[in-house]
Image (tube, rainbow, N blue to C red):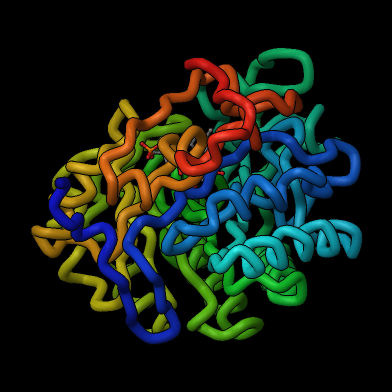
Length: 361
Ligand SMILES: Cc1cc2nc3c(=O)[nH]c(=O)nc-3n(C[C@H](O)[C@H](O)[C@H](O)COP(=O)(O)O)c2cc1C
């Protein structure tokens, strides 16, 4: 008989009331209509199947089209997109779940062929690497530096997307400030070369957060960070100091939660003391993060809730599998992204014996 896992204990702090501590991490799946940015009709089912998560954070969703990272990524800017997401939020709630929409501006980690204009970023610094576009991979391009005047307007675009999310029925929004995209680029050493007031690394991420908080209320706003993560060609030598300052501001604002992605173990002990509110932790260190690693983080008091990404793709009923020790399905990377429906809603819960067989890894 497996012992009770700390991941299955309820969590309650402020507005965050969760039946367990197993969150679904945000995962882009690339299945939205590429022209309209409306989520796929099966996206409601995909998330409803995973509604037993303590909290679902959706895939990244662009607040403005220039923030779209690649093919099939949905938006939250048009009335049609809001309607598409309303179906998703309604389906998750009907299945008993809670769901925050992740607001994601990719910044320079996109391509003019995706957004129809030059990409934009804190500074005109090109990312090393390649970008996935329709039909294959392309060389990155040098982004246009956002002007001092347009940044407050962009913060308002985030606020509008957040209002749209609440209008669609989401429980809140998570601002994507991690993994080398636009907001992360303002924090990093090699991508913020500005000389105006936004040379202050935390200023723009903070202005976005303040605008979103003013629009929908702090108890409906989470923020995702990945300190020191070099993904998408970022350098952050001084991350303990930069993120300490950011977390102190988030404490002042009273955000619903901080979502901390750790690409190295010391991130949790280093930053936990600087954020007294709900902390969701996600281990992002190569292989899919494991139940045992999540349990250790809870037992050590380093986080309050643990987010799992890839395990949720093949195991829609992940909390119950953690509870019972049922075998876990590992999904091939070829099913992560793309317009194919195979590998999207065809992974059954353990109890649903008559669903189609899972796609083999
Ligand atoms: C297919 C895929 C898509 C992802 N998309 C996003 C995303 O849209 N936003 C985000 O913040 N992180 C994204 N991530 C990162 C995950 O949220 C998570 O940090 C990472 O997968 C590590 O957790 P895991 O080991 O439990 O999968 C993505 C990861 C994968 C595998």
